[in-house]
Length: 335
Image 1 (tube, one colour):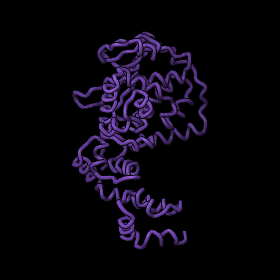
Image 2 (image 1 turned 90 degrees about the vertical axis):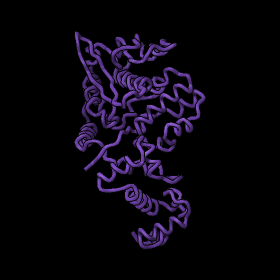
Image 3 (image 1 turned 135 degrees about the horizontal axis):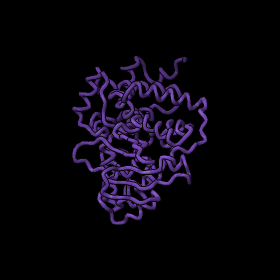
Image 4 (image 1 turned 120 degrees about the horizontal axis):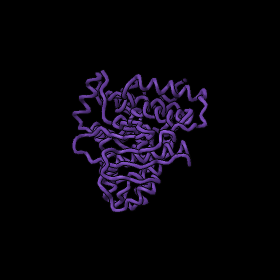
């Protein structure tokens, strides 16, 4: 039985480090304060806690005194940050078709974000909602979500894209002109929704897409991902261990912290899938050890560090227990 944890791809923080530094913040310290680590951002597919991302954005906005921190982060985004989904969007015949496709695959990027489309009297309202715990502060996260949607449509339509107005639930800010410059439209604060209102006819405009073989392949791949549902707790844990092991120890407590849950909750999710943290860690280490020994000539001491061992001797003992021979002998054997 697969269980699920509240995570988002680390690609959601693409550009964060550069933005934080440009505003005088210590990006590594801000990430640690939110329960994240800088190295978890190296791979855009690494799962991280949605709660931690929200906390990071709010703390960063407060520390930098940038009321539009979420928008500034959105400004650093492009279609390519959506991964394979971006290629499928570009192949759609119209911006509306691309938007429908984005809504279809959105939960592969962020299962906590919900996009809805509502058309009335020739106007289309694109609403962004976020599943979050009661009382969660969402202003910066919603700025980012609405801002990224604007950037996506802007990239698809170029100068043909023009929002009518933008709604944000957050209270009025001291410099609303920053928001209006970003969107190129009037921004209503204290609105009853977070999102963009545009002419439906604008999204009916054609794109230069032409359903290539690559787009068809990617669509089948994405449909397969949807049919498998959300990633299991075991898969999520494996991805995080792979990201966190190099250069340091990786404990159940660290992984749980990255996922925004306590250690017991992580344990409960893994037990429901007939495994535990030690078993997942062991499997990942064995796969990484085989890969490192087979594909390069790194010194064994360096491989020990990459696998999170405190010393070469600890790695040597572990390897012999798991593989029945020394790492040196394993490396020298014929393929």
